[in-house]
Structure formats: structure tokens, C-alpha cells
Length: 167
Image 1 (cartoon, one colour):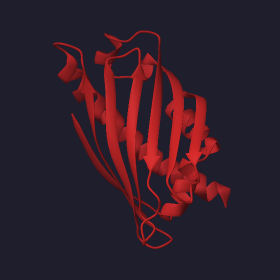
Image 2: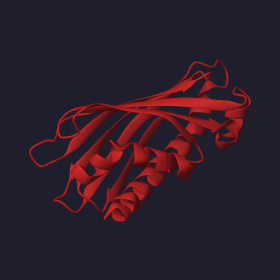
Image 3: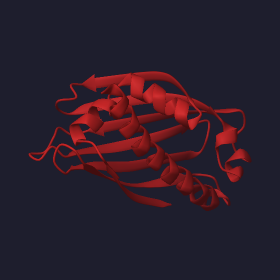
Image 4: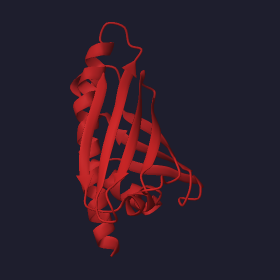
């Protein structure tokens, strides 16, 4: 199932990337979406190319009803984002892999932070959810799409609020 969404974030791409490479921001975001940040790592310097890996745990109660038929208890999710260095205008691109442990579901996405000066960024996310579950796999992937869109919207709202709080 394909995911495409665009959001304007009222902050510069560099500020957004600084937040995305911050453990404090990831803990804040996890709290907002009802999960627990259990590990976080940054490989590289955020001034250039950098990889961010976060691992979260959440209750299956946060998932679509159809997922609850396949997954029980808690879900552990690992998100690996590989960010490019900045383009000449400050734009950044990330390739993202989302692994849902103990579930036959994964997602891949790309996010581009299109810099619009120092005070506005167009965030474009395109991705796909895949599953290896026979019979209900397509339904499961279809049910995941609105949750992913909601997460992208929450992430954009929360990164803006978090940057404002940091002053």
C-alpha cells in the first residue's frame, strides 16, 4: 500500500534535522504517540550524512483492529533513517526502513525536507507498507496506511512544537 503526504513545517530544514537526530525529540515523540523509546543511536555528524536508528515499544492497542488479529501483546518497532548531507539550498533526503518485530509487516519510505529559506520547509514523505500474511495481507497493509499518515502529521506538528520549546 502506497503512502504519499506533504506537510509544511514552519522551521528551517537544518533545525528539523537537528531535532530528528536528538534523543530528547524521539523520546518526546514516542510519548506523544503512546510508545516507549527503548534505544536510540546516531551514526555520523548531523552536519553531513547521518543515520538515525530508534527502537520503540507499544501496545497492540495502538494498531488497527485487523493487526490485532495477527499480533498479540506488545510490538517492537525499529526505524532506521539514513539522511543525506545538505544540498546547496539546505534540503535533505532520508531513506527509511521500518521493521515491526514479531509481525509480518514492514515499511519503506523516503522523506525529503525541501528547504524554503531558514524559516519554512516542505516535508514530503513517500513510502510503502508490505506484508507477507496470506489472505489478509492486503487488508493489513491498507489498514496501516491511515496510521502512517497520522504518524507523519503528528511528527511534523511535534517537531515544530519541540523546536519552538527549545528556543
